[in-house]
Image (tube, rainbow, N blue to C red):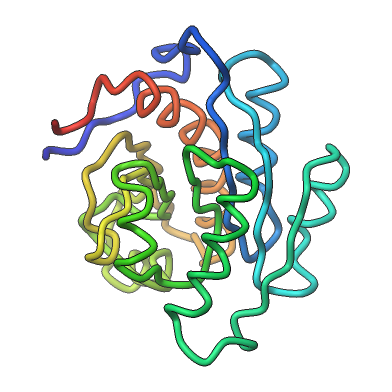
Length: 211
């Protein structure tokens, strides 16, 4: 499926009907969680975040979620002997909260096929590059090392192959001559906060799905 570029956040709109029941997986600060929640509060998304699962004990996303009275549940991946056992624990929590769609927001763990199959075409991820360029870890560093002049971010459907699922939306970010990893990442992240709600609206509308 060819990449689809973001024109403007205004090109997507909330879908009618019951709110989509969202779960968030996060490992860090939770800035994309905050962007999604803000879009919901601004009625730009017809959705509700029912829980946040996080795997790093001091991840700031937990504090952000609890500030909105959203359950934040710590599940330590180190407490499980296998990836499948950890993913099974995640799935049990998602089932308890009746989650319909799942958003990865800075989630630093690969998901097993068993997990992905439990939410077919309903797991979204945001990645700090213009996929298919620079998949995997350290995408911003990869872009700078390659000397590209344009980078950006991508929201895609999660499949078993890393960062290779169908693309919902992308936003381009110019790479400046004096950029560091920190400065470029900050500008990419600013675009992520606009792109993710936009892409979620597209997903909920099913307009850009490859089936």
